[in-house]
Each structure stands twice: as structure tokens, then as C-alpha cells.
Length: 178
Image (cartoon, rainbow, N blue to C red):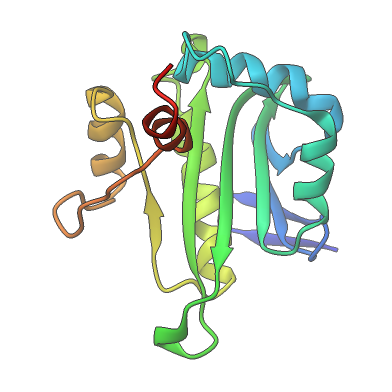
């Protein structure tokens, strides 16, 4: 089924019948195992020196099979230009309504400033609202000032909450400093 939504087409697809948007030549779709290399290339722009970063095609398949996790890619002309990962989290505070955590947003440097980032984030935002999410939380490395301005421009509020992160590698370094 195809539904008209504003000037953008909604195509029903994916494991839960959620929508992928096709706007111009850019489409948003769930990633598949064949996208692993492209996603790794995009993630490398986020963590250029992280030797542990590895995108496993099998893991992408596990994500695709999970009803609460979604790895999206924005594609144009057969190339993946952006990616983002969304988890829908059960929340005991608001009945059956979930909240979303939006992570690992990466846009190819050649497409930054072109609307590609806006495309993926706004479409994921619409997806989350259709799932009944009460909020969308995203995290961004403290040094990524341009990304923070971008998220603020999209009305994500950085003044309401403070995030704290503890990385697994820090725990193990503390247990075995050698």
C-alpha cells in the first residue's frame, strides 16, 4: 500500500509494517547485512581512531529481527549516505507508551549540509511518534559542536537532562590496569 503524506510518499515495509519515506531520490529504509560495509564507513567518521569498532552483517540481521530495534539507512542513487540506530524502550511511567533512544547518527561528510541529516532524523522522528513514543533521546559526543547545533535546530533540547555514560572498557581497565 502507498499512502500520500505531505509531498512525501510513505511505503509500507519492514518487520512491523512501519513506513519508509521516499522523498525525491533519497529513501529511508531498514538496513540489511549487505549494508555493513557502508555503515562501517559512516561510523568511522564518528570514531576514526576506535580500533574496536566493527559492523557485523550478522548483527544487522539480529537487529532487523528484533521488534524494538531499528537500524536505518538513507540511500540515494544506490549509495548509503547516512545511518541511525533507534531502540524503542518500554517505559513503566506512561502505561504502554515507549520512549526512543536515537544513537549512532552518521552522515557522509560529502552530504553534510545537503539536507541528508535532516531527512534521516525527521523521518526517524516521525517513525517514533507513530510508534507512540513519549520522547526521543539522543546522545552526541561532547566535542561534536556542529552536530549539537544541528540537533538544536531540529528542536532537540539539550537543557532538560544530563547524560552520564560509563564505558565497558573503563570498567575492565580499572579491574586489570596492566
